[in-house]
Image (cartoon, rainbow over all chains, first blue to last red; front, side, top):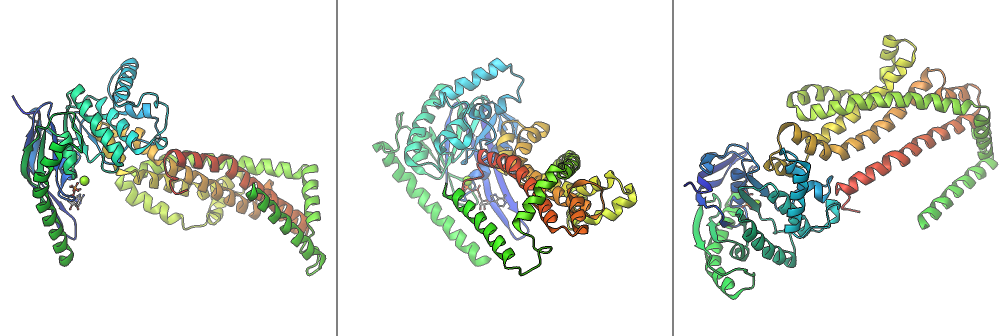
Length: 264
Length: 253
Ligand SMILES: Nc1ncnc2c1ncn2[C@@H]1O[C@H](COP(=O)(O)OP(=O)(O)O)[C@@H](O)[C@H]1O
Ligand SMILES: [Mg+2]
């Protein structure tokens, strides 16, 4: 059987008139169905680029992404992305936002409504159906974004640092909720972050990316029992090891930025 | 409340200053009338029916001209904003034409349509349609890329993407363009009416000048200001505020 998601030798080079940037330098890994994989890497190492390529929003320069064995050529609702900024539509209510993707499917109005209720319930946002986006907090926005994505029953949920802009409390709560949502729905999740502990709280497996051009440098299985919390002993311990590897990459990334400045 | 009071005081002071200046007789009354004579002209104009008639005629013209501008301008802008080729061709032409004050279309309009209602409508449309169109182009082009990417990962492409994301994202810009277009239409209409057209507020102004009736001239100017302000305050300002608030564009205030 094929893995759910195969990322095979992805290179991505951005060429602008002034210079070319190799964002990804050959990234390969697999994600099995039901896994919760975290990709960890320093800022600017190409995490967003990787996720965009998998989502089909960007074409890779080289390599291929396969879903259930079939090559990915375009965006599709089997791979919904949740961005750092919730990207909810401000002209729609919470309910209509969750319905957005569902409206493009040929569902009956009742089925649509049922799914909206089900997923708003799942993320704890029942009762906010008629509220507009500018009236809710950042954490609530990410919950709605989560409901909007999950309502489409994606094969893989792609998350690009979705909690990075939140305060610590909201982030803790959402870490707990995301773990339980993953356990309940069994959705395959690929989660990108620059935060070591976040990766360890959430992932069944953590892939460490190198500084630009990004490659997978290390892989850590995470065997700490759930529900995990960001302050857990075992977790803080495990973080030390990963942190040492990551620090190396951060330094390399900074060095490279320094060279860039000189070259300009 | 203080805002209101301050404004009231300011206008009272303005009125008093005017009256004081008038009493000093720096200029003869036919150049600088008393506020009272302006008020009388205003009352008289409404009493003899000449103001209401002029207002109706002007309003009718601007409503028709403005409606045409919207019907042409908004769809055209939505189209140009999305089609690269149109943007580089038609878009450039429209941008260029915007440099032309709309009243400069009058000679052409008269040659095409004669001294008719159509000529003045043409001038009004040329005054409003370009900025309405360009604002719609702007709105479409400035759709936040994040919205587009979010919609595309949820399976939206082509027409649904345009209809459900690009169009609503462009709405604040479109409304701003509508507001701008209205004030341009109003200016163009007044300019056109001043120059030749029968009836309407502009002609009332010309008439006042010909009769050397400064009180009347100022009274008509006052009516024109009030009409322009009323529409802006009652229609466009609330609509713009509501949309900007909901779209989350008022974070500064
Ligand atoms: N559209 C683009 N054009 C040019 N360079 C880009 C583009 N997108 C990203 N990059 C560059 O690619 C590198 C990786 O970016 P990104 O994937 O956003 O990193 P991360 O998400 O890990 O912070 C950065 O150096 C960034 O400047
Ligand atoms: Mg990023």
